[in-house]
Image (tube, rainbow, N blue to C red; front, side):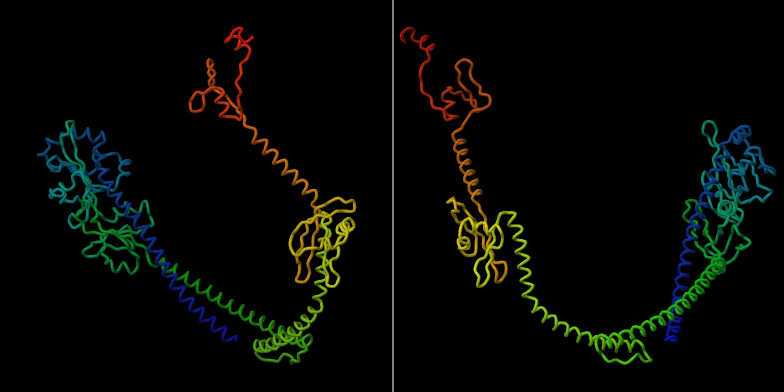
Length: 533
């Protein structure tokens, strides 16, 4: 059992280690891809914002008062025949250095007239000025009032321009800023804000690195396939820009070595933890098995002892060997003994039940009669019980009182099962009405309840008489109530439908009144004078 447990634990650990290693690698790879995707989005946003800032920088330069005054004084429209002026130091029409440091990197600045002819130029720190910017008029036209990504002398450049207008909105010239998309450009675009990011520009045709913000690690001219061996890469081409003729790709990189070391340490730590857990589980399992074996041995011994002592079984003491199998045999024997004892107890219980059934029924009858006696004495009910060979017997004091006042008990026990009423006279020859209620309360026993309902009948008769008298009185009463509209002259009455009736006719219709016509003395005097005398 121990060898089997160790083998199962080892196989389980190897399986879980292999499975967890795969899961952790996939999870780590997913995390790297997600991190690189987020970083790539940030890097691309920084690059986009940096490229757009070139156009804003050109517009800010020509909008300053110093530049406007300079161009007005120089009269750009009349300097066409003069040779271009190349500034070795910062020209007077540029903002101060403190302001220029807030602008994007602008190594080359050009000032042209309205025909595209170069008037002045300036390159930071004496950088070689790209002659193609002067000679290629197409580049100048494409860069007017827009940001252009293009190649100059096989070097990718960003160009941005802004037109110069006079007071009547005539274009006098153009200011152009230019910068090579080199290592410095990428460092200024990304590394200042996101110093941990690694980005590069890749030629789509050759798949070679053109520039990078980490040139010490990502060499110019390196193949992308070579770089992918050491870095995780994601990126996007420049074709989504509206003004670009470059076939370049902007990529973000994450070094594989750092993440591989972290992944290796995590996997090693996880493998060690898994091994420790596996060993701990094996030891715990062995301890549990030992404890269970001990408990099984004790339980087998207790079952054997109980069977021998209480069930009369004859079993041998525990032997050596498979304790579970021994326990199984003991339990089977124990169960058979229990079944035998159960059958014996059942037979004894049935015998005792038959002996005590009559006693139980007698006790139940006594309990019921006692309860009925208590209740019926409170309610004024008499109880009659019936026993074989004895006939009806009074079961409470109230029934004994009824028998004393009204004679023999048989006058109350007459009739069958059901409810009926009888009228009896007491010793003073006074009639009383009794309600008799007889029912079976068991298969062999019946009971009769007797109640004097004389007063109840009297009250019921009185109530019926009163109701009849009130009904007759109500039928005779028919009164008028409320307001009656009556004519103040002829004394006619108006009904609810608006019709007018004589007073006698209205009252006769709406009541039980009958009229007999006569004449009062006043009316007789006014109508007949002294004739009524």
